[in-house]
Image (cartoon, rainbow, N blue to C red; front, side):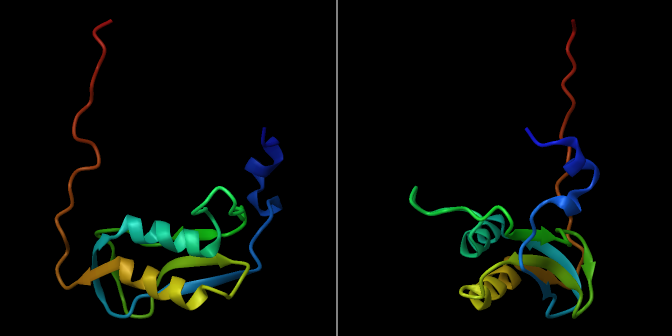
Length: 121
């Protein structure tokens, strides 16, 4: 069980050695974000495992700063990589950058909530 002190102050949790920003190569609107590619980037950083023998580093991962539908300008931060190893960093940055599709027009996005189911009881 996580002590409440970590909820009140997340800075007390262990952190990765470095934070690396991934920026937008162009201005426009984020059309979509490839979630599968984001997942693979997490694996490259050590946040998951491909086999049961692999170890998971709980301090690494990705902080997403932008989502589909957001307007971005060239150079704006799309996401932040939390890393402890530089081994796969270049590949991770390239793959994460490619996961964002940016276009000129604001996309029409599906609704977040399709319907509400209410109990009759």
